[in-house]
Length: 233
Image (cartoon, rainbow, N blue to C red):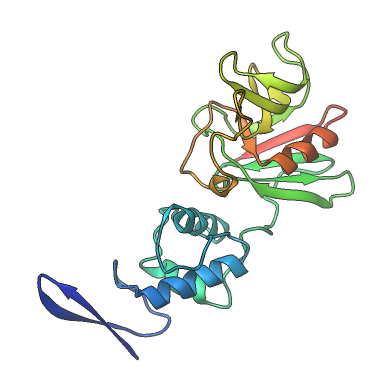
């Protein structure tokens, strides 16, 4: 049994936590936060520096863990999440089972997990990783890459018509929906947000699927011919 002490309203209060049980909100110590960050990093969830501070990167890593382990995605380590993170049974964030999506060569998008898989004709997963999309705009279903609504299927350096580039743009659903790298500013080439937000629900796109640069390169090369895209919740 471990006893955790914290100060509240000027007086010491005692919280008792038994290994494997639910921890109440705000009950984690700095040492426990560091342990959780270390464990999240080991599970490929990318929590950033192990500093004991629960900032946005650790919250994003927690969401990725919660998504991979089919938990409520709130970004909080409190409650059962901490116990699940520290348990040997905790699932990795960067290697996940493919949802039911038929067969053949395809790209599978899980909106519930904020995640996608590239699967070749033999059923082998050749690439997988986190995404940012907009489930309220893009509906579940089966699509295919190619020209849509009179627009080009593939544009190496697409633009929003204003200040951003949408690099490696591959269209797969009417009319403007496609895959692309996280948008970059035309002025300096910087992304509008970091890769560490991928795989979370902390951002939303305008219907497209945002991915990291290397994933956008992989999708570009994977879709030289029309390719099936399966979207599931």
